[in-house]
Length: 102
Image (cartoon, rainbow, N blue to C red; front, side, top):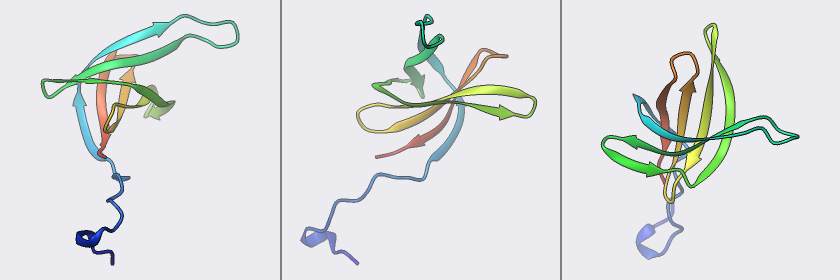
């Protein structure tokens, strides 16, 4: 066991997500198709708990099946933490699914 009082390594960021499952407002950039690639969606920022979070980086974009419908998931990060936002094209709603705290 490392004794942090005498200069052990700093704690690692959390790899276990905190499940949130709350609706959020999201500002999004819909980028048009670009020759070799189709149109893209980039979450720019979202509001959660009355606070604005700016997505500095898109880490991963993927599609997931929920029952008989598909949703899009966007793993984004700001300066400190990572978040998974879920977009449901049927309801046109956004959900903050998970938070990974640093």
